[in-house]
Amino acid sequence: MRNICVIGGGFFGAYIACSLAGDGHRVTLYEKEKDFMQRASYVNQARVHNGYHYPRSILTASRSHTSFARFCQEFPEAIVDDFAKYYLIGKILGKVTASQYRHFCSRIGIPCEPAPQWLKALVNPQLIEAAFTTVEYAFDAVKLKNSLRERLNKVQCHLETTVTRVAAAPQGGLIITYTDAAGSHTQKFDQVFNCTYSLLNFVPHNSGCALIPLKHELTEMCLVKVPEQLKSVGLTVMCGPFFSTMPFPPAGLHSFSHVRYTPHYEWFDTDNHYSNAHQHLQQIEKHSAWPQISRDAARYVPILRECQYVDSLWEIKTVLPRSETDDSRPILFKQDYCLKGFHCIMGGKIDNIYDALAIIKRLV
Image (cartoon, rainbow, N blue to C red; front, side, top):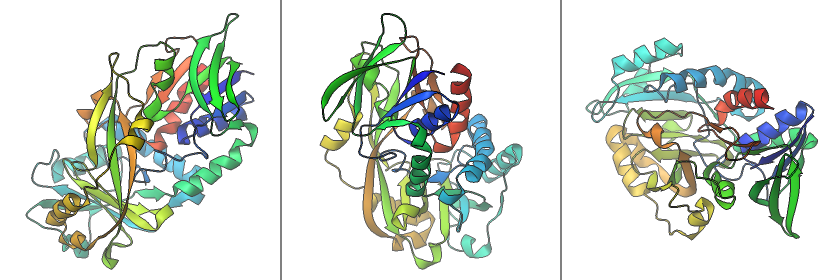
């Protein structure tokens, strides 16, 4: 049995903590927010990927398809599948043709059939080459959080607690420093798993370690009321500078994202520059890009101009810089990062947790 620390109570951190505690290890979880899954685990398109999103990365697509059934089986209470999901292939500026997309779906073994005529009648044929019926679901982040909370009964959890640094202990192991309402404290562990997503470099930076190269984007997720005809529909127009709208179960609305307008700007973590992403998000003035998103989306699917804007969710999206070339979402796993027993983990999608966990269990 090992004494393990997990930093970060998003989906990745909470799931890893539950799994390791279930294996008999003594696990302590530290989360800076008042509850679990409050940031990127909640502020996203709530898509349970089945591979369709990644025609330019066969590895990411095939791993998504493999994880899809497992995730749906493990968390049926959080799965929302009462809508039809269609993928539309754009003609102009697209990076994949309809023929290529069909071949891609066949290659990884995911259903891809022609969309019904009523759906095809909604699109602009001058800009959309083809429309396909697919199998893809959404998840309710609140129900998913509640499921994980029940499993955390074997984990010692500290909410509203920030781990600030990690250092080698004199007799082996690691000592973390953390702060809470009572002040600053230290605690010794055998291994520490850093699962803090956009703050992945926070502890390494404070601990004198080199920074992991990461790209951050200030992102806006619009929440809208869609026309009655689309209430039980999800649409993704791809592959290129296009957009997607999906049911967003916790709000009873649809999320709306656009590859061109959802990211408002970007910055990088480098050895010469580090910026606390959460502090940056709080301080920056935010202006919605919904007018531009709405106008552009209506060119491809004219009925989308009837969407009613309700609100925007803002968060920091973090990816590996190399993912920009092929839209891949590999798992970042830095074992023994600058200190033996200190591991940094970041996943680009909720449902690729299983690949990360396989690596972690072998390590522990």
